[in-house]
Length: 584
Ligand code: SAT
Ligand code: MN
Image 1 (cartoon, rainbow, N blue to C red):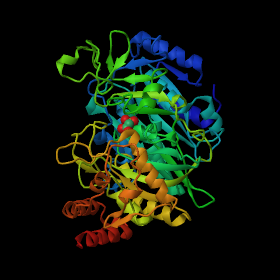
Image 2: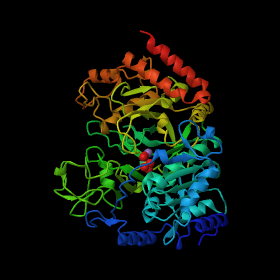
Image 3: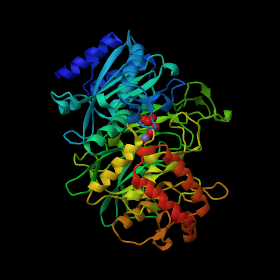
Image 4: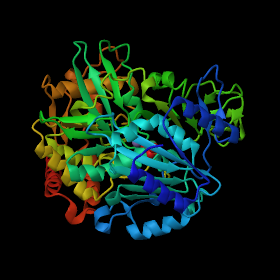
């Protein structure tokens, strides 16, 4: 099959451990995809949807106790605890290999081991990385086939080399007591066992493209970030690229696929990626980014023709749905799709369900998996091996109060501080309480593969190395008024905020200086066609000093975690923010 010796030897070694009945090497062809789909339909692992209405679409149901990433079972296995830092779970590598080795031992007996070679990034790009994932799940194979460039293309990129990520996954018995997602950055290895849910098992995504890649980036001088990438084209045809970090399930996919509102003509938004950005400094001193993925693993609930028409359009064919409602017509439904639920159907667990029950039919973290090539707004640059030049970096979170709609940092160091202290109210993307404010630096808290204090140092260092670094902004679409209503309409209208950001980057407009950064002058903010008064922009840009003093104290508490690893620059930023918000 494939001739690469290092790959062959490693696959044999892992097969001796897991003892599958058969090994199946994947090539990434259409015929192979069809054959595996048929097989999974026959065993019930997949359910066929109506092929007339939704050609190529299937439904999968996970186990009830296996619906989201499990951060408490996710480990960074570096030789010392210090290297994993205060925000990661740590396990010594020898202990992890031995503990998981016992669970993997014989775990594929009676099953097939699929060998998935995959490429993260465009073929022929110096950004790109090869991984091999071994798995006993056809669902994983089919998802990896959408999310990555899978098969021969990856082996060709690898050639005779041995520089590939070694990923081992077995669904096993899905017992949460025997579920572990372990990363060995020094060995470029990932072992995941006991889960069948996306983020835990599609090893190219969070495990390789963020946790392992962030570690590589630190050593090789680049950044692996939890960011969407979009190009915004103005009416004159100039395109500026923005990379934006939000925690999981805070609207990255909606922003990446944004459709400009009709009341705001002349602009186009081009999608490059919706979740992950790998960024390097180009010879021109700017920051260049690629999206290492080839598909979207998006949150389903709340996706509608109103919130994300492009996504609705692209998921009508060749899409894998996970944990949504199955209707009697063989189509799918979820909360927030429309006001027209089926009279009866089957909920995400396959139980008969009717909307009157008052219970949600789709799981809160249900997902779609769709190839990027189906994105109606896909950028022609999406697989450019050089990437795209980034003008602005945007951090954001879900905050009912405190954070204004948008502000710009004073400079790179201050921007790193803004990213390091960002916070958001939690969502259903991971198993924990929903709606609690949690600090999530650069939206990387669950995804940084090494000590986050060192990660901040790395960000500062990247800034020093760039001749023309991107400007750094912070946004919050979720600010509420006293009655709990949203002040800002969000969705397509967020383009107005992107326009302000780009105008700032191009030096076209001024801004009002506040203790936390620059906010828009109400007159510079384009509200044409929108039923909002400049007073709302003022309200959205209000800096409440008392609330900010409390926020500042909470930031300080959080930063203490990093002890001596916290860079002196960030300590200084913290002090000066404190002084600025004290002044009347
Ligand atoms: O489950 S994933 O980690 O793949 C998606 C997410 O949480 O952002
Ligand atoms: Mn994500």
